[in-house]
Length: 374
Ligand code: ASP
Image (cartoon, rainbow, N blue to C red; front, side, top):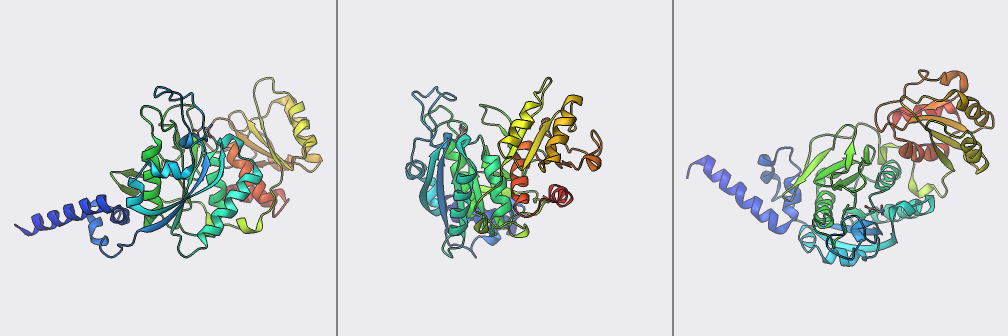
């Protein structure tokens, strides 16, 4: 056997061992190139300890029949049962389930978000916990992941995962997504990359990911592409998050007990100006105006927004288009009106960021910098 053949055989043996043990397969992913990975495998044989926190969603859903891929009841299967239904997970890591909620993710509110974040933070402080996986409904996964990405003070991997089809459906995607999420959470290469979202063979940063389709398994996208893939028991990174997260931010989940009210008002032709007044009357400290195009504001909406600002409410121009940046002082004279623009943050992400920013300042100039920074 020549030298190349011997090396190839060794690599194949390590790869197959890794697929059986699961742990080594996670180590394989630490190398940028799969072909170079086996060299790192023997040094780290310990299985990672991963806590899987169940919050509900379709990944915990069940339908009346196997053809119910989109009509089913979400949030009914306990997290321990979900884990038990994917025995491959336990080969990858030592996993422990913990049920914090059993809800559809559309029912997340500030209180539940804070409760989840604080529990994750508590677990991450335990030396025997290497990473966290959160099973979550897909509808608001992007908000929870962005919130955790901005507030957790740890570089340990935190992966939020969901599924588009319940476990009872033909083509159910939850089992593989969970397996992939545990692989990513077990992979030392996932450390320091912020809160990640894993679905449909892809690894996304919690900052950028968004749900883009109501029923397809291929629904999650990031404006600038995923960070990596999960394939055949290996998680592979190709990009890094560019914006500050977790340890690099000014927010600490342990120190936040309440989030200020931030409203999102959606713009459309014939939008009712009373929706701005309603948000103000409901106690909104800021209004994210999910405007058309590049944050354009209808002529009859300018005065209501200026009136809200005069009452001390922050006005943030965002875009309902789903991508791109909103340019300051372009569609509206933001300097003159004392308004703020999002960078590329979608309205629902802007709400999270604004709520956090308002815990520290109400200076619109400082708030504008926050949008450009995070
Ligand atoms: N409504 C569900 C939820 O977000 C949908 C899903 O999980 O895919 O909880």
